[in-house]
Amino acid sequence: RRRRRRRRRRRRRRRRRRRRRRRRRRRRRRRRRRRRRRRRRRTRRRRRRRRRRRRRRWEGRQDSTPEEKEEMEEEME
Image (cartoon, rainbow, N blue to C red; front, side, top):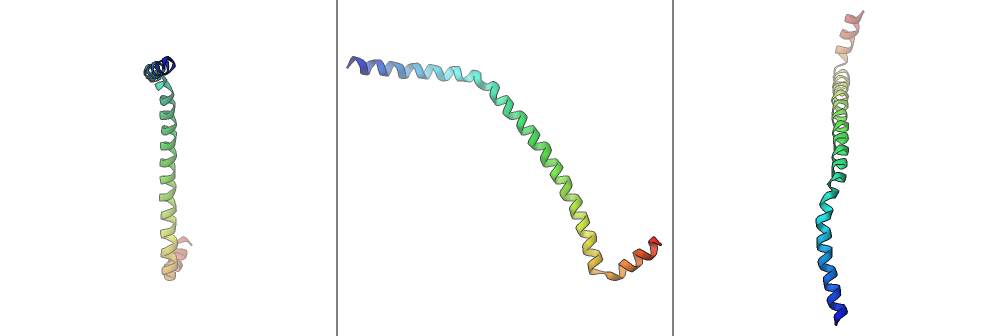
């Protein structure tokens, strides 16, 4: 029976160790730096998508109106 009481005291010591884990917040700061790098990648992807949409609009206009193609070629000459 005495051994069982000693095990219960060890559980109380584990609760005190959880308070020491609060000092490990320095590792969480490193994770915040990684999130900043991901935000930069998202802005670059959005800019690339906008450029692709503009190119698709020009291709759609040229395919739908072949007469405008001839007018553009004459103006370029």
